[in-house]
Amino acid sequence: MERYECNGCSYVYEAGKGDPHNGYPAGTPFSALPDDWCCPDCAVREKPDFVKLEETPA
Amino acid sequence: MTTQTLSEAANWKDGKRRLWMMGVLWPALPLISAALALSTGVGLFWWLTPVVIYGVLPLLDKLVGEDTNNAPESAVAALENDRYYRLATFLFIPVQYLSVIGGAWLAVRGGLPVPDILGLAVSVGLVSGAGINTAHELGHKRENLERWLARITLAPAMYGHFYVEHNRGHHVRVATPEDPASSRLGESFYAFWPRSVIGSLTSAWHLEKLRLERQGKSVWNWRNDNLQSWAMTLVLFGGLALWLGPIVLPFLIFQGFIGFSLLEVVNYLEHYGLVRQKEASGRYERCKPEHSWNSNHTVTNLMLYHLQRHSDHHANPMRRYQALRHFEQAPQLPSGYAGMIVVAMIPPLWRSLMDKRVLAHYNGDVTRANIHPPVREKILAQYGAAHPQSVEA
Ligand SMILES: [Zn+2]
Image (cartoon, rainbow over all chains, first blue to last red; front, side, top):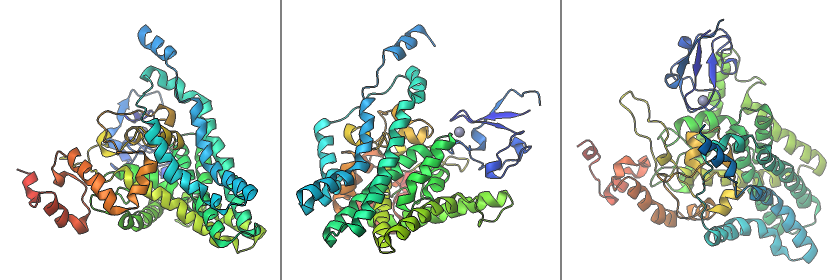
């Protein structure tokens, strides 16, 4: 499963979990998030600031 | 981690550890002043809280001076996980509510003359305002408990939407012309106040509307964080009105107004004139230490949970207050926030103290500052850059 980490805090976006609080349901791939999507934890890093991590088995 | 950093972490002691409990003194001030006024019969004691905040704190800042001590990076994890520091912020809340509820009761049932009630209302309002600062510390955290406590702490100041707007609005747009809560060079506090109050409210509403629309819900939904937070104010004020009668409502609304105005004057001085430049991509440069005004004045820092180490807070919003750092390159205010809020309320004094600091920060190039549009020409003429295009040269 694809994982992306915020480069400001330790939040990790996992497509399997999504970001439902902000309206991106579980299963939303990282590529489908808009560019102005903000880190849901620190809110000061946006999608382009995220770093791809090694994928885990889905 | 090397052995050297390990021993560094083990040897480092937080000199301010015990002192952080002083934060609880602020919400206790109206209770102390009531005890003094009622036991001595001296009505002036009802005004003790504003005298302490606007007079004694700035004086203590001057006497006690500054503290630039930073925890070594290797000690930060343990410092952040030490639950004692969390307890210090949690304890603020029951004392705050005791002041608000006790103040409301005294105002209605105390048989006090109007000037004394006014002093009491201002005092309780200053506690509600400090509550926004405590809520600010709590509202940035991941833990659900702290997030809920943040909203309970915001309720008396009628500012529940701060919880939404501060994190997802202000932090995203800080030190840009688009941020209602970043003040501009040449903008007086009295021009800033309505712009920030109205702008923050509409932005918070808009943010929740967009969020709920993405979830396929209407903005009129109980999951709307703004509606939830405002409901807490309604429950608090409604409960007190049922108990003490509707006559308590003017007292509550007035103290709330004082409370959120205290937040707005603090907002005013945190980013005055500072601006992030746009990168070639069209995005703003990331918020850096030079985009916030800081102060290391020890006493106000203890009362406000290091809020004045504002640059580190904007760079690392999740960092807990006890671990926030002083940065050498961050612009420094001439006094602590407590003294500067008094200055901010006197615009000519503020401009004479701060405009030159903004100018010096930008090496005399006023065009690099965040200039208030209505006075732009005047500022450019005044500070010697009548031709804004010269910045390209
Ligand atoms: Zn983050």
